[in-house]
Length: 433
Image (cartoon, rainbow, N blue to C red; front, side, top):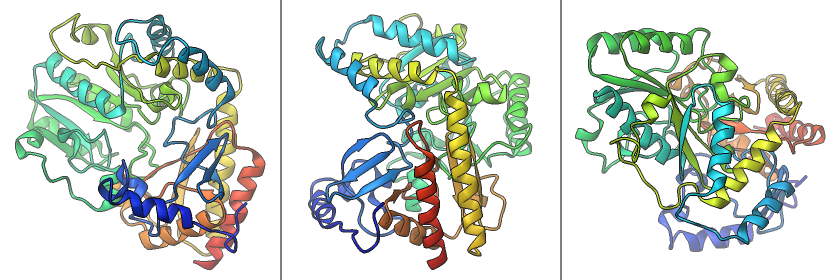
């Protein structure tokens, strides 16, 4: 494990300084810039298993896992071997291939709501497309989303969004027309009464409700008992659709996603991250009667040249094969529970106010004495303290999400020794801050 005395980031600083003249903020995605935690971002050189190495040679135990996809561990040898074979056949077809059928069958078999699926290239694209489909199927315009839930950077979702928007403190985003967001209604996560009020005031104009069934973009927040079930009842009552954005939770909370874990089946689901096995991919799927509206079967248009890319399909297939082995999710739950409960205990022993927890291979911790049920609760966290904690852990070789408003991820590659080292580092840092 890296110690504070040997922590050197000269090359990272040099590369990032040059990057700031080439790319906005020096990054290709905002949260990578470390704005909310301070200090220079770390420039990665390579990853393997549960570990990452930066350009200065520092080694980290990684709890981001490329923001979720590396659930089997980075650069898994079986995934790499499958990709090497696929590369020999070409990198892109722009035409149907058998691999799409295979991955589609695996997704349909695993995820309760999915009877048909359409592959796209990102979670943002999946959510954009499913919104259009919701409106096309119901012939209604308005949607309900939850404060602090992030569904990609499409205009209509950048209303009280979480993730990088929360990290940077932006209320929404310049360049988003009011006319685009007028039809986006918002409610606090875990607040059924607020949702009921929105439907009572708009009984015939709401196409559907979209949410992260387990929030990962305001930090880690789980649904209260009865919340998901209540949304299912309300949407059925008003003839609206229920959409689970499982880009983050799909195949991570369980093999069938959060909907299988909680026993609540939405009408439509968006997926990503894990089903690409580390390559860019997204998907949306659901009831066959709804999905039959998608072109060319129906009139709702959506297309993409790289959709169903053979490399992404290959990586996804192999990743799901690995995850479907007996004992996989038991191991993920065990190792993550050890990390999350240990971290909370270490923090409390050091005198800090903290709350948090885990569910399967997701976890999170907030520096607050308030129970966190929604984004407003999450905002009571001590962000400056989190920044100091993040930096201290980084200097000791632990790579955590550079934002209080992001969940953490574990993988099958993380060992008990990794968790013990992480908790030892946390004990040192929490005693100092």
